[in-house]
Image (cartoon, rainbow over all chains, first blue to last red; front, side, top):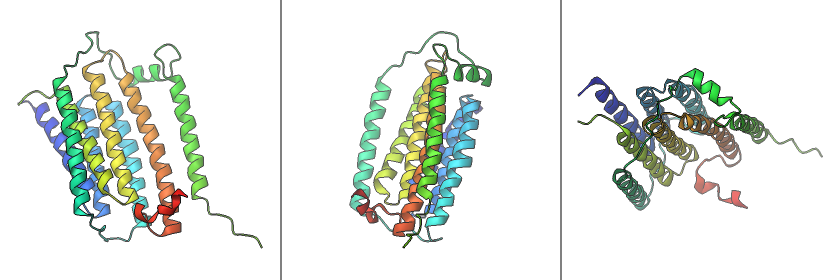
Length: 172
Length: 104
């Protein structure tokens, strides 16, 4: 068993176990911290697959951005140290049953299927290739989705400002 | 033990997806439901990268889909948290059970 295999199983265990705790714990701040570790595990899996750019983006956006935003909003909306109320047992049992049945179905389908990949030469996922294709306007270029996503981000920015704006006091 | 490959990554991403689905079903707090959605989106990203690496390594399309999903997830989280904080200002609670009149 090589070192790469050991690292893979450690990253998988980190991702899945902290993901389980993130949806299972009753203290919301701990749930956010476990979510942080789960996202770091996913970034480690990207590093393990040698997609370093995606791993860096994952760490910057998810770990550094979204988790901090979530923790910030927890502090704004929650009393510290207060546990969330316990859920009904029947709801938990049926949710676990539904999730497990879906999991079993998908896993059976995946392991019965034989995937046939390409035999062409691999293209290196380095930043030069990514940048050339991301802003390319030829057949496999992604310039149009890039612009559409920038419009979406602008719309989200304006939408956040509009939602968070205080309503004007009524003039008599 | 086997050398990890495509099927191992697919197992992890499926498990992560259904962990997120379980959290989305059981939680009644809006912030924790948002966290479950993030887990689901992460499992989808992991799937795209695994397929790109092990099956279609001559193209970079899975990588671009992952980048766009991450950007859209960031925008979605920002808008969702703005809505949650606004809801807390008017209802003093972010449980979905207490936000019923929003649908009218």
